Length: 367
Image 1 (spheres, one colour):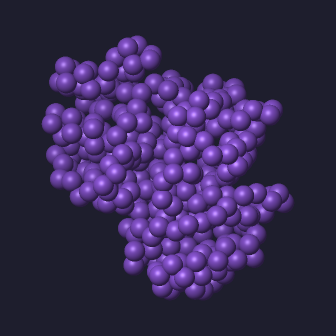
Image 2 (image 1 turned 90 degrees about the horizontal axis):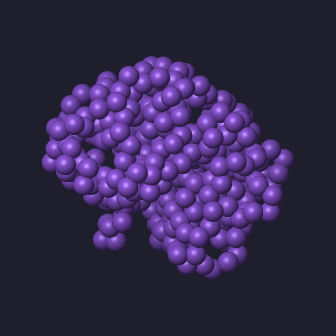
């Protein structure tokens, strides 16, 4: 299979390290303006007959490339849906993509979150009614530096600009004003933010027993505190640094609270230092690259005419996904009481109250 990899930043480089370490029989061409002065759109238009699979890690608008993918009937994988359409909500944009009729194979949101965290959820899907919370704690530190482990600009937009939302069976897109959320995690008081992410739509769409889904995130403390206490512009956010050689752990998973009062965390936890030694990147980029690697492997399994997220494939091909994750040493652990149950229940009660007062009624189930 001939693959065009567009975008050779930290995730692209981590993906290629995975390919080198775990093997790949495909021919991969790298296309990146900064790396080799190659423009992806121009390359596709001129060499589409030489491309079987297009992997998009550019961070540019998804539909910009999907138009070319549809035109030339290419297979496609990306690490996240990018929407810059001011006229459409995140949900409407997501829904319009998944409803598109295609002839090739389109895999959307094959990163970590969106991406592998969805498989963690469906692999541990409870048989009771429940809340599904994508829960991430990035403990990266590097002295006194203000930095992030991924795009500072994108984090700024998610944390400070874009609408925050949760998803329920009655309403997949409920905008909510949510202040920082205090949780005690591993005996340390931390502040988390409600962050807008499209994987909550996939979980809600495919899980009838899920009463609500949302994404709660603590970024590296240095950048999170900086953004919370300083009003800066998007251009100023662009000037902040991403760092690969950092200390601490990255912890991403799914926090499930069911109607029998069980609170369990299923997660992937990796050391930034250990990942850097082996892959010359941080754990955040490595996790995302693992999702991209999965997409590359699954593109040969799915049928023509498929447009899908990791959630869709996790339901249909769970064993095949587990086989790929085992190959690349992506582990899933289970921790009870990772978050204080009392604090979690308090957060849900406050959220319920806020939604009722804002006119959404009793849209969150009460256990």
